[in-house]
Amino acid sequence: MNNQRTDYHVHPDYSIDASPVKIKEYCQRSLELGIREICFTTHVELDPVRQEKDNFVCLNGEKVSVLNFAWLDSYFEEITRAQDEFKHANLKVKAGIEVGYNRGCEEYVEKITSSYPFDYVLGAIHCLDHIAISSQKESPHYFRNKSLAELRRDYFLVLEEAVKTGLFDSIAHVDFYYRYGFAHYGSEIFTIHRGAIEPVFAEMARRGMGLEINTSSRRRGFEEFHPTREVLALAVKAGIKIFTVGSDAHSLKDLGKNIDEALELLKEYKLSNHVFTRRQASSL
Ligand SMILES: [Zn+2]
Ligand SMILES: [Zn+2]
Image (cartoon, rainbow, N blue to C red; front, side, top):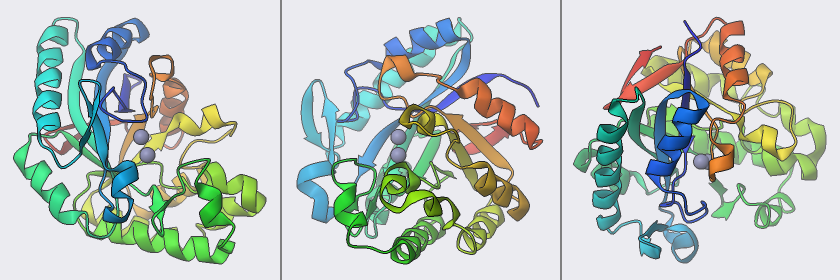
């Protein structure tokens, strides 16, 4: 167990909602920040209902369909180049994706993860009822029509489904609903996991899946990370052993943000930070 800095959740310029910062620039910044390993996790959203909104990546400054493999060729080329270039500086560079899970995305995820040598496939819940609860602007459309009990039912059902697809190495920001849900429902949102998340964590532990400590909540005015301490304690209790830390940076200034504190948190719970190589976890 040690304090080697890693950042396992970084959105380079391929993500349509990210700043136009190249993989190489993030790597350079990593050196300045003493980060030893960086994993890029470009967004892959595949909900056919939201096709016109989300299902794109940015390739050479142009929006292209996420289904057009040209972006993946370019992505892997750039990552491979960075791996070579930064090897001598002792920085490891990994290829990942963050899949926004929706029912029906399985086939495509399967296809890209079997066609490209990914190190890390992160699963996330960004949408419920085809509405982005990850968007400040859009999320009220979901929240104002749903009771907290309905949000709880919807979210944990989709989360359980995502886990059971077996497509993901790890789950991103597992209690993400509180980012924008807090403003609508108040502090009760911090307890909706009780009784619902335990069986999901048990399933994740059984499958040897990982859980991410995502520090982005700190930049949204929250004191806790995703997951909160209470949720993290339940993950530990369920037997989850694989944890990664990620800033969810969409711009250079957020790279590595609060990562040291996330590592401290792992230490406090006697947990090891993990890295992934070709989808296999190893502890640092
Ligand atoms: Zn996400
Ligand atoms: Zn992300």
